[in-house]
Length: 369
Ligand SMILES: [Zn+2]
Image (cartoon, rainbow, N blue to C red; front, side, top):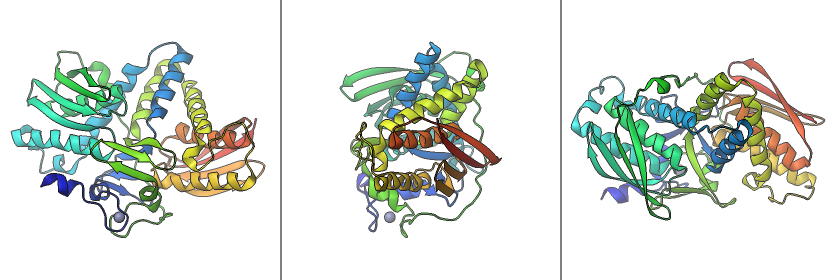
């Protein structure tokens, strides 16, 4: 029975077997989706997205959902493009009826194991429409972009969607072919960069390759389509790291580079208020004893490669805080996270600056404001 096969767990670390099959932790501090392809994934709390989008919207006074939607859609198309079954030799797959059905099934499977939602196809007619039942979408707008992106990849023409609400966390999403002009979408090309290899910095399961940091902290609920970080009691998803950089590149083109200051500040505020994710007591207001600070910084450094944020090669805490990271997943998000850890622990403001030692190596420095 397929269901049983899919719910098998690793006998050593107890993570679902398909997690280690679909995701590969590299020694460069990154997570690849499917072996050998460079589409990066990061583990992230989906609340971060709504927090960032709403703070950016309130600062610039205009909605950003269309920009985010287009970026997310293009990342999804790329994700399928990079899937081994579609690369050389299997190019015809998506043109054949069984190949299309395979793609729809693959989408549901990916969404389930990356914690985006639990989804089932309820109807699909190639070139015309698709209907899916969706439970626990991690973010309805972003998930719709995932679904539409998958259809546009498959059918090679524009699609649009409507949500139909069923129960509190259950929905039907209907997608149908659209005669919309796809010119806007073409601006959101995703830039991929090669990863510089490092050395493994965390213990990984000898059987499935999942880092201990991940198998200890994350729990998969495959019936619900949820991944939770047990200690913090919050939801997490594996998410293509290029979405935010693509969306913010476009925002910067339209609104200026200052948009990145907003990104840093909103990521920093969220991190400072949610230090429980890094083992902090989550109690704002009181000063932390030194050993608690050390433990939180320690956790932060360990989470970088485990969650695909990059490879920390040096870290120093003194008058200033200095962190050198190879393959940072996003210069600004990571800078904002580091700033948030400092401000949450020290209860005072700081500025974050950085030097790019090369395209893939960044040295951050925090200074008390
Ligand atoms: Zn394992």
